[in-house]
Length: 112
Image 1: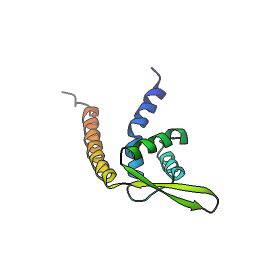
Image 2: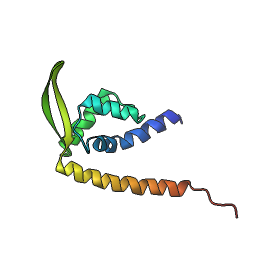
Image 3: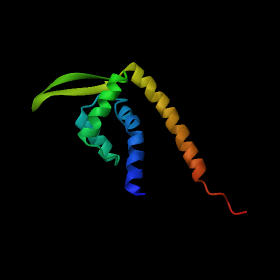
Image 4: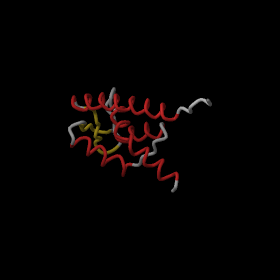
């Protein structure tokens, strides 16, 4: 088994949560989302991000608006819907539970 495959699957599993978290406080253009994901070492390309954004929008978690750009075509800015805000709260709770569970299982038993 290759470690890179496992690492990629772990990253994919948290991408939706990370995208929603990025959009929690401010709307963002897809290239801004990609940049923030790259800063967090969650390397994503446009070909990965756009289908995720579409799926989240179709699920009612995201909305977008168009804004004219001074340096090119109009840009689509994404933000959370009210449903998205509530969904993110649920994910946050689930994430915390998962982190606690992982941390508990990783603790080594003291020698007896």
